[in-house]
Amino acid sequence: MNDTLRNLGKDELVELLEIYAKNLIALDGTWFQSLEREEGMDTAVRHDIEAWRRFSVSEARRIKKFLGLDERPGIEGLARALALRCQSAANVDEILVEGDELTYRIVDCRVQNAPQRKEHRLSWRSVGGVEYGVFAESIDDRISCECLSCFPDMTDDSCNCAWKFTLKA
Image 1: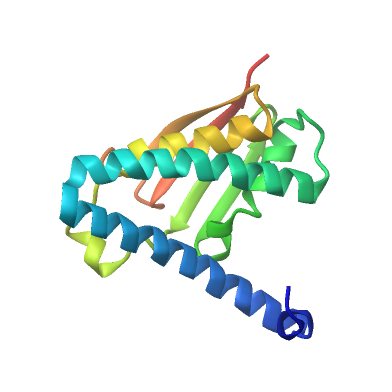
Image 2: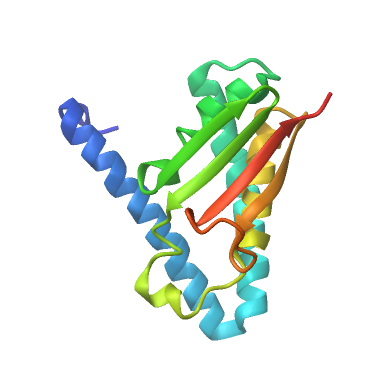
């Protein structure tokens, strides 16, 4: 890390974190659109799923280490980790824990609410299922993920997507 970053104040670092999160989302979108133009939607989605599968493992591993979580931290560990994902700094989300279940809702998603995506949305469910499922399993291999609501199968109009995580006995 360079001295410019080390010398930033807390408020500046928080603002920069949000900028970095938005940049990551923009990078994901631009490479996806480039691949879609060249190879078509099916190929772009297939590569997007694979990219998120691999990235989610790395992101979970780094957050798990940062938080000092045990090997199997359960639902509480997942709640702490989800709150620190890159996209959490760019989107509005909610985490609700009840016993061995966690509901994660993205209330305002920069990707799904982007004007250029409103008319041309892909099935976020297929990508998100892998992204969130792999992230959760990387935090604790006993946790499973189920989609509650996500385009194109919206069952909850109060959010862009909702996912349920369950700790298997």
